[in-house]
Length: 64
Image (cartoon, rainbow, N blue to C red):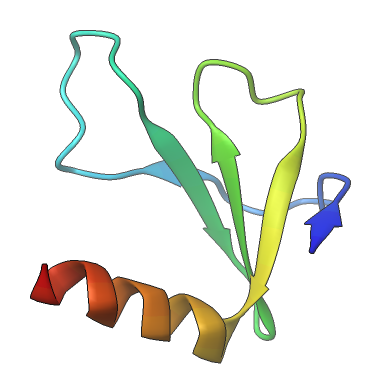
């Protein structure tokens, strides 16, 4: 689901992201939702996932 920026959430970038300016995502976690945005364009569209959906995605990505 797409959403506008949630009010007052703490965005963070993965510790795996380098400083080369590549494709990086920022994530903000709330009690019910994980918000994801492009670190190079934070004012543009964001995605929001239920925590269980995000956990399933991360588990799948780790297995690759």
